[in-house]
Image 1 (cartoon, one colour):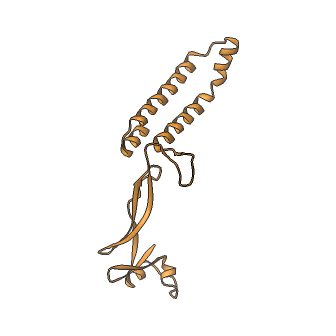
Image 2 (cartoon, one colour):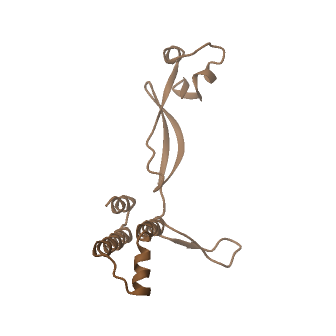
Image 3 (cartoon, one colour):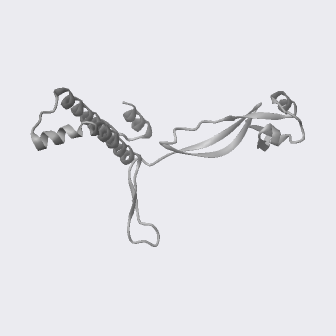
Length: 164
């Protein structure tokens, strides 16, 4: 992606073939010679935690940077009553979403040995000790992760809780 610059402002953005349609095989050197600069991407934070939207193109010397606004998503659930409605609507915050995801992950790990638990309940057949220990570890890990997520007060703390 390249930008044509005039008076230190971006006038046009596009691939070289679009910016120079009447030129056969435009290349990087040709683009620079014609006053086009390559566009560099600015910071885009993790979109699982931030709303990332295009802001503007900034020209600094011989660099054009495509900048973004990184707005943190809500950590907590937000309950609102939409205009014209009498019923409140709850939008789940990141904490609720990640706790639910952690439980789905734990349940999928436990699912492989759930039949042993059912067999124990129905026919009193013992569950192997290593399976009991692994299931207990999965449940403890999920509980600890849920507690860390719940305790998070910022996006950074939430990201740290999820990486442990």
